Image (cartoon, rainbow, N blue to C red; front, side, top):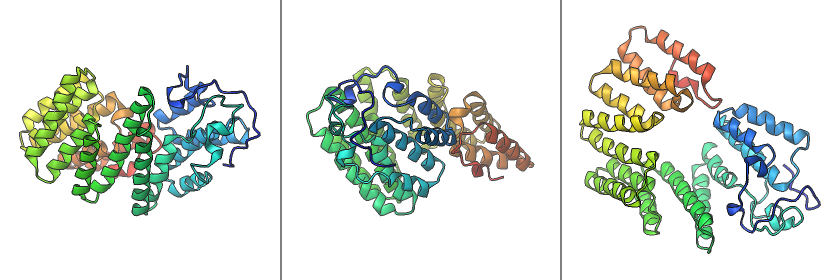
Length: 363
């Protein structure tokens, strides 16, 4: 993508001094036909997004600088989802420097009156850190993630509105979570503990990160510490009066994990049942319930749990981990498991999102 030209003079965007607090009526007010792009993304139609972005570019439908950047974010994300990492990197390389004046609102006062700051989507900054890891350069990717974390914390150190602070707090948790996952994949547990404790000591008492702390503590054998962390999560949610189903299920899944480690599979199943009753699309609870049933030697019910979830909520339940587990159970339960897995694979080919890795059926 060429750098946006300062001479562009399309229809001005409504005034706002803080882009994060601007109230848009629809996504289409934010960028050209953004509602359609977001709908395709929610359905996992990444190839359709590529077609739509390329069409918009070829017909010159993108009239403002931030339109170009928003569409670039979608095309880089789509290529990444489709595991076309080098193509994604080539697209991202078209942005020479995120800090360039070309990508600041104040460079175009006629288009963005009374607005200042960077127009680079946060997702592009995240993809800029992620892609080197996908291309096999782990250290460069981690270095970029740490720079991104510094960038986010720099925003938090400025006095912003409550809405801005809330957004950047969420982004801080998101980036730290990404960094932790990469360190966990290399069993670098001490780094993970330092990152989470640093986040908590900085005042970001996020229940998801506290739960993550408990999970890491379990992996290093600190069961007492994990129980303390999980208790803090439950207390934090209880004291906040939060009735969010996702957070209540987080508490139940933490309890179930403690039972699972203690090999009390029946108690774990009860906790997972509570989760599924509150939210029939809680795939983590569904998957883990099936595993507990398998440990209880109830392979038939274990298979039914996973098959039922695929039938009820295929767009949510259809992920590689769940399918791998289901295929493993088929191999244990059926002599003719190859035929059963082939039937599953054919069904997946019809309903799966574009980025689903069909090799997980091991057909």
